[in-house]
Structure formats: structure tokens, C-alpha cells
Amino acid sequence: MPGPEAKEFSVLRLQPAVGWRTERGVDLGSGDVGLPLEARQPDRDHRREQPAGRRPFQRSTRFRAHRGSLASLWLVHATGRWQRPASTGRRVRRRPPASGRTASGDHLRHENGQRRALSGNPREDSLHPCRRARVGPCTEQPRRGANRMSTANQNPAAAPAMKKKLTTSAMIASIASEGQATRSAPFGHALAALADQRSDIVGLSADLSKYTDLHIFAKAHPERFYQMGMAEQLLMSAAAGMAREGCVPFATTYAVFASRRAYDFICMAIAEENLNVKIVCGLPGLTTGYGPSHQATDDLAIFRAMPNLMIVDPCDALEIEQAVPAIAAHQGPVYMRLLRGNVPLVLDEYGYQFEIGKAKTLRTGNDVLIISTGLMTMRSLEAAKELQADGVDVAVLHVPTIKPLDEQTILAEARKPGRLVVTAENHSIIGGLGEAVATVLLRNGVTPTFRQIALPDAFLDAGALPTLHDRYGISAPAVCAQIKAWL
Image 1 (cartoon, one colour):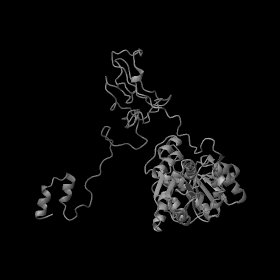
Image 2 (tube, rainbow, N blue to C red):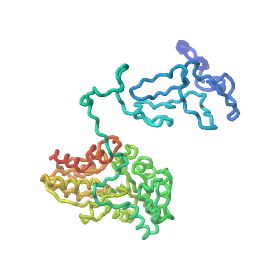
Image 3 (cartoon, one colour):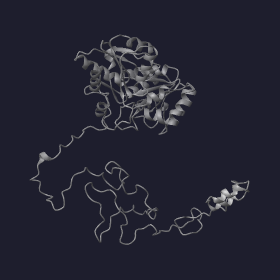
Image 4 (cartoon, rainbow, N blue to C red):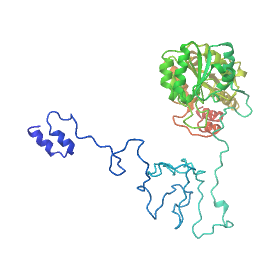
């Protein structure tokens, strides 16, 4: 590179290889920089690496502890006690390897997390398998020299009050109130009965037939049941293929897995082709206590924007039984939220009949109109009865079909003067029934006082459903309290 430009490059402190390349002229940046690097093992003696499978295993002391230091150290300890090495002459105990086996990686450095708690609070993180239990609750230890045995002079009133332990758990997954009438596995029984009449009905599951009530269908029609394993993308693709061959597949899994893992396959393989696939998914919204990994609080928002896809959110066992043959008769893809197990029976006392795309007024009232869907219709009816005792007259409009929405019925009810309009849904406040209703009202110039009862825009906690429903405002008492505050 001639002229002053060369001087400019000479001032730069380039690496040797880069400097050699800059002196070559117009072909700067092309060609080999230097000889290829030799294959070596950086943590071993400098020698060429031998072919895989031929290297003899040699136990090295390179990373072993020196004499007088610990060979290993537990990084988790009982709360309130100090970590300290064993006394002189004692060795830190290590779990012996299984009989006849040698840990091939024992000569290497420990990886992050090996034989110790993960970063964070050790009382919350999982421990190494050889630890039999988590670290116990924190208890203050007496100071050195204090009497560790006698408690006769301690004042019990001075001790802080212990928080009452929750007696329920995440295993409590029933939404039925105590003493409420229920029906067992309404979806499974309804699908099995429908398959008795129609030979084109098939059922598919992603290793969750028992937990979506599809095992009832599988037992009645084993030749038409397909277990796809834990592969939701494959489940939806197989359902699409069966629909092309003239079957009416009912594909079941959890709602989080369908909406998050298999979204692209549902969109491209099913919805875009307008195939006759029925996607029935359990654990919608907050119907499980196992935390965000299983709580589908955003499934309606995800699927509402998908063209051709109908969305149904039934209230109780009766509506599930009625919806199964109705969606099977509908030509096109359907996503239906599913309540499983012992499902409450509520709508039978209202003479209810499910119709696709139709909202139904279950209760009239002059003070409040609750527009609800799914299990929140059940909670709204319970709240309406409680509020009536306080002189609040509440109407309940049940909207089982989220898409297409029954706009005419919603507008007719919302136009009635003097009523607070409240939407109630077992879904995030973002993207569900509430926003759909608000859009319809604003587009048509209907502007009543409007409020939403929904789950927060957050990842929810794990725990017992009764506790979580109270915490996030979708239990019947919580619905009553919110409506009273708005009046």
C-alpha cells in the first residue's frame, strides 16, 4: 500500500498475522493467514492428539488437591451453622461410586453445580442427589457459651407468632366447590359415545390421555386411538394428515403445550389449510397449581389472531358433553379448552343448550351485567347469588364461543342503561374475552362503565387452587368484593 496510507497503517499496533496481511497490497483480506493450527489438548502435555478411541485412559493428578487441603467440600450446610473443614485426621466423606464402576470424569474439574446447590437461595434450589433432603427451616442457634439445653426461663410471648402452614397443595386441582354436583370425565365419555355413531372419529394424545380424559375413548375404541408420545408438533402434524384422509381427529394435550410448543404446526398444517382437526386441551388458565410451566394463561390471546380457528371455552360438564358433537359437526379447525376429571355440573338448572357462536343470558339483573366465559361463568353465577343478598341485582351473560364472538347479543345486553358491565375470564387480562368485548363496544359506539375481572399480566405462583383463585381474584368471594368496590 504505497504513499501516506502505508505510514498510517505502520502506526497501528497490529497482530503479527494481520500486519503481514496488510503489507500484501491490493489482495488484502484474501488467502491463508498462516499455517493451520496443530491439533493439541491444551490441558495435557504438548503432543499431537491421538485418534478418538485409541487414547489410553490415564488418571492424572493435575487437578487433584495437594496434601493438607480438602479433596472435596460440601457448599451447602444446615442453616445457621458455619462451613468448616473436618478436624485434623478426619477426611471429608464422599459418596463411594457404585459397585464395579469408576467415574470416568473424576480426574477433571467439577462442573458448575456438581455436588453443591445451584446459585441463589440454597433453601429453594435443588441439591445433589446424594443429599436426602433440602436444607431445613432457619432456626436461630444459641451463642457460644450459652445454655443450649434449658428453656425454662425463656419467655414464649416474646417469640414471634408462627405463620399458619397451608394445609392444601398444588395437587388440589379440582374447581368444584364442596358438595357441588359433578360428572366424571365428561369429554372422554362424550367422545366415546360419538365414536359409537361415527366411524371417522379418531383420538390422539401426546402422552397425556389420562390427564385429558381421552383414556375413556381409548378403552372403548383402541383401534382408533393413537399415542404420539411427548411430541406435540408430531401430534398436530399427524392430526392434519388424518384429516386429509377423511378422519375427524381429536388431538388432546395441555393448553400450554399446544399454544406454545405446537403453534407453528397448528398454524401452517391445520389452520392455513382449514383442516377438520379438533384440538382439545386441558389445564386452561389457572386450573392447575403447578406454576407457569403448566398454566395456560395466554392461550386465548395466542389463538384469537389465528385465521380459520374457532375457539370454545365451556363452563361445566353439561356444556362439554354438548360441545363435543357440535364441534365435530363443524367443518374446520377448533380449539376447545377442557375441564377434566370431576367437572362441576351447573348449567343443567338453567335449561342450557350449547350452540356454536351463540351467547346465552343465564340470569337477568338491573345493576350489573357480567359477560363471562368458561369456569368464570360458574363463579359469576355464585357471586350473583351472594350479591343478591346484599341488594345488588346481577345479570350473567355466558359467552362459550370466543371466536366467532356473538357481537349482536353482547351489544344488545350492553346497551341496556344503568348497568355496570364487567367481563370475567380465566385468562390473562391481555388478549382475552375482556379485550374482545371492549373492542366490539367501542367499534359500535356503546360506552357503558366497563371493568374486567381476569388474571394479571404476570407469571403466576404455584400452590393450591383455592388459595391461588383468591389471590388472583377469580374466586366467587373475590368477584363479589371487586364488584362491590366498583359500584
